[in-house]
Structures are given as structure tokens and as C-alpha cells.
Length: 484
Image (tube, rainbow, N blue to C red; front, side, top):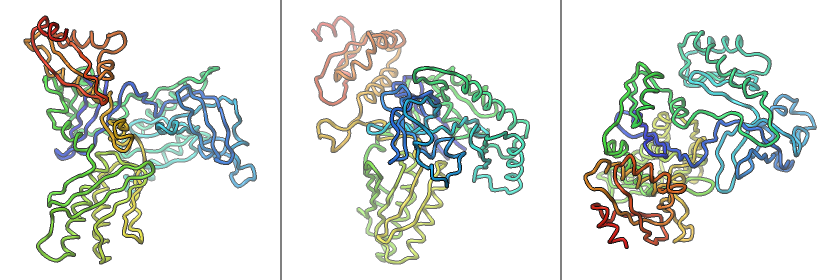
């Protein structure tokens, strides 16, 4: 049984997933950061680079999107063994094309694009140019797989494709057909829109809706939200699940101890129960994880000590990969095991624990240097990249909480003082944090004061790092006198 916590009380939207009362995943999205994955744009090709077999496409954002030749519909439909394999034979500069965002960009790279459009539902993914049928690997019943594939062949026309999600198992053909027709209509509504400038012609689901689709909510799940509108929507969408409304003054993530866990997830060191520890380091191209015995010395042989530590580490690493949303290449340096049998045990433990992860991944085994290799599909930015910026004080060698994250943290704390007896609060904060809380022309702070029922008085603490401190709570006039 899972517990899904949805926090939407401020502009930062967050979702936490508990499995057997243990935190398993954390996801979040800032409203100030466009949630563009799944969005479809009419874009204009700016550059075609045959040497990279890629094109850069203006879709109206700050960075041009990246489109590889293999993600062109015309290339996939052509005879790929022909001499005309260069991307310049399929797309030209200045051309208008319909593209979909598959990955968000970074500071260095624009978003990744494809012309092979996808429209996702709870039961299937409809691909107007996919030209293939597939079933989720998690459906292992051969009879059920054949039923779904036969249904796909009946539904698909011309170049269409269908991928059946795990939740399609044992569903009625009529249910699946209805979702297929709904998703197909979405495509038809997009296809014929025209524009001279780059423009978004289809917005994917909201962050919460997309998360609920990804995790495939089940009847036995419990969903808890701090927004009454969301609760009403959830009751309509999942009438057989347990839906609860969090209306307490203390923040929903604080009640369920998620805030404390997030702070721990920003630290590179994770301690194990036996006194050993692991160190997690994010580099630009990969994540490295180092296992150390720490305070654990063991009671038997050295081999036994190493094996027990590595087994505990494997369990914790699988958990941390999901919680921190680590992706790409992950290299794990376990304590050196000279016996190959011990390596096999650790590999088996890792495979078993990673089965809990719904994100596509592959465990490649140990290298000659006894480094365990894992690759994991990148869906969103790692948690630490979402919550932190490069530290100006240490010239980029470390990280600190972003001004946006600190502002949201302050706002969540303010909600816990709602309807207090005192009429004003004095807060010292850095200028960036003050600016974010106030909003454009002070509009956001006006709304905040209206619902909190007390006055907010800010002064600049002139800190180079995003920070704040509640300095005084009390009478409005006395605070104003002190500020002056």
C-alpha cells in the first residue's frame, strides 16, 4: 500500500510517495520553471549540423531545442541503409516543424526534442507516427500480452503506434479503445494548427496530473492533499481510493517528516545502521557513490565485515537513487571484495532492490576495477539540482539553497502562523528572498497578508546567500518604530 502526499499550498508543487510507511520518492516543480516535458511546439529550424546529425530548433524559449536525426519521422520511415543518411536530407534551416519536448534543458543544454509525438494516458501511450505496438515488460502473462497486441493491430492505422502501460492489464477492450480514441483526438486537434512564429500548440498535463499518471494510482493507495480543489478532483478520478484533505496549520510535508528528509538528501554522506557510510557525489556526466566501513569493524572475519557492509550499502543506495532521482551513469565503488561469490551476492541484492524502481534502468555489473555500473533513464533533474544553486561564496565548488527554495521555505513557515493573535511579523531576509515573496509590485505579499491575517514587515540582512530570520512577532506600530 502506498501513501501519496501532494503539497500545493504555495506555488512550489511537491509530491512525496511512501511505500509501507517509508519515504520512497520525492518530486517537485516550481511554477516559475516551465513544465514543458510533453508540450508540443511549432518550431523553426535554426541550424542543421550534419557532423552531429542534429538540428537546433527555436521553439520560443530562451534556449533552442536539440533534435537528433533519429528522432525525425521522415528518417525513421525511410530506408535507413540508403546513402542519404545525413540529417540535411531530411530537414533544412528555416523550415517549420512540429516537435515535442522529451527532456528539460539544463544550464548548458536546451531541451531535447522529437518529431515522434506521444500522447500518454493511464492505460496506453498513443504514437501517431510510432509504427509499432508494444506492451509493458511488467506484464509478463503471455496470454495477456498477446491479447493487447492483437487489440493494437486492430486499432492502429497507417503509421500509428501504441504502447500499453502496466495498468492496461486485464482491462476491458472497450476501456482501452475509448482511451485510444481520446488520445487520437488530442493529436488531431494539434495537427492542423498553424503559426508563423514558434508557439506551443499543446500543453501536457500539469505536474501533479503527470505524476499521478506515471505512478498509476491503485485502489489500495491513499492520497492526501492540502488543496480542497485537488481533493475534489481526486475523488472524481479515483472513487475507490482513500482521499484525504490536510487542513491543519502545520505544513503537510512537516507533518509527514518529509521536510527533514529533504534536508538529509542534500547532504553527500549517508550513514548506515552499522556505523558504515556512503558518499554520493554528482558530477556533470555521472554520479559516483563510494562505500566506507566507517565505525563498523565487525565481529567475525574481514570478509564477513566487508560483505555485510556492502549488502547494507546496496540496499541504501537503491533507496537513495530513487529519493534523489539520480540518473545517467551511476558508478558504485563498494569496499573491495576479492571473492567473486561475494560480488555475485551484492549484484543480486542490487538487482532485487532496484526492482522497486519504476524508472527504466540497467545494472551492467562490475568492471575490472570492481566498480558496479548502473544506467538510469533521466526523467527530471536530480533533487539537489532542483533545490540548490552553485555557491557564489565558494566559487562553484559547493552548493547552497537557491533563493527560490528559501522563499518557498519561508512561505511555508508563515502559513503555520495563520490567524495568530499578534498583528505583525518582522522578517530579516536577503534581497532576493524579499523580492520573491513580495512578487511583482508587491501583489503576492498582499495576497499572502490577506489570507494569513497579519502584516509582513521586511528588512534586508545584506547577506550574499539566500536566507531569512523571523526577528519579531508583535504589535505593528512597535515593530515599525524598531525598523526605523
